[in-house]
Image 1: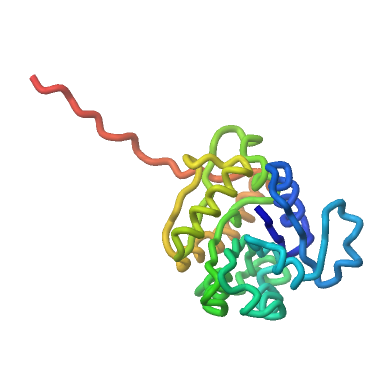
Image 2: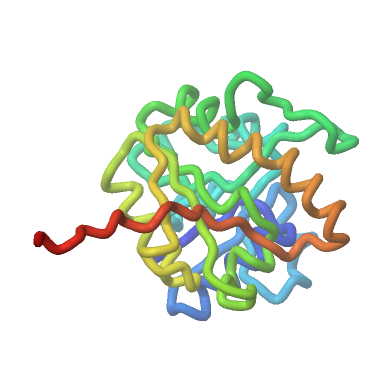
Length: 214
């Protein structure tokens, strides 16, 4: 599959390496591609990356994502699955830029013909592409209104090492605010652990045992 990743930071590069290793054709998009030729991955302009992609991934800072996507244009994005992994935070990382909503909802509202799926924003880039490096299984969440888009996203998550048993579909695009708002708790946990390489797992009660009849 042709995957275009908007952004050239740690997250975009980690995902590009992960999907490339799984056999996908990856291309990173930058506003200044000539300045990013040293990262060891193919880089092009934003519009060229969108034209290349069957699936686009937003791995840009959440406070700039919508403006960046608008620079590409709604017609170029129409019908293309957009996987959003961004979170909007203040410069000092203490406040969310979407305290009563989410970046994913803002993107979906701005581009109604582009199915948006939110995922992978509850962990750091190391865990995104190596979930088996943790001490046991953990959970990755999916939010979005388009069932086909979520199925495609699920397959791409599997290619990164997330089995279906680790994937939890939590509902429509409005549930993405829960994923993004976890960023504040994430930073608190990281401070308590003194490390960022961790994830959470949803744990449920075991099924009730059915006792044999007398």
